[in-house]
Length: 447
Image 1 (cartoon, rainbow, N blue to C red):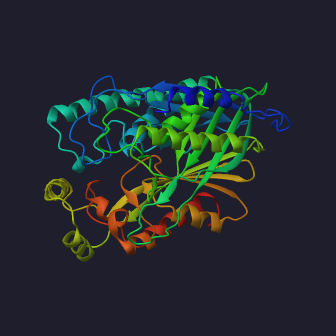
Image 2: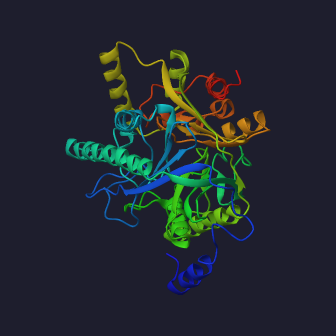
């Protein structure tokens, strides 16, 4: 952690940075916004998600984990809610059950409900996500299932709290920059692409008091490694906490970007977590001073594309080339056998949620399922140069890695090998990139 004296000096300086600096007040309130936060830290020791190499369950709490909800409404348009969680990921089963609850209680449509996970590797396993990676007893899986039920109840509750707290607000958008993300596929592309942008949505109350700040970054939330076994939000958790401490009464929500092929650098210690989180919070604060107002318009759309898996011949070549411990191969084979017994065949495609929110006349938030590589963010920015494109991964269902054609052809962990741990039958076919981009075009009304 940051030494005590430096921390005091830092917080004193940070407290002078305001969300509404002189001369950049946003326009007259034309939106309504509500925000809520709930603690989702497990009350007991659970296996922690993300690293197959871990050898023990959680051993305490280094930083609480939270779910946060931001409800937005303008005019007669339906209310939309962004939900962020300090977890490795959510699954389609979790978000589907929560969406059904919320629709019954608040009449919020699926297109108006967006879930995003920070991808911290220091949170609990949820549902049966990445089950091939973990050697757990039936009792441990039962505890995870019990926590997952509690999590779903809490997500529905925090959404309800945000919706019930709607009040007049102003929205603004800006973009900053943080430089600690580095492309991690150096074996294939030593100078590979990386996205250092920090998109920021600023939400002010009618009197100018800050209600919420939403910010993103495209980088794995993995500063802490497999030997760290306490609950922690990693750099994204530190950045959120720093912003909330600097701006009392403000909720800070982190939206994970297309960072499947990027790691924080350097990494490995709590000191580095603090450094990266502080750097990200500083980038947000700098950007907030230049936030441009967003006019009151919100259009939402949601779709599910089917991403085809590679055919049998390609799948067998893939399996023969994998350099993965035999224990994971055995678990994966057992899952595939169970799928054939249950359905008569292996799945041929992966449902992939794609969601588009168009805020005002210029800002488009695209939320993609899975661990999405950075190529998608760059391609959508090129295809829509007249718009401000905010592209998020880890949204609505984290079912595996989503490579571009480039990464798929290069191969490696993000290109297909990680599908073993996610319990998928093999790598994707090369059609996935065009299918995803085509679905974005359809949902934005451009096809």
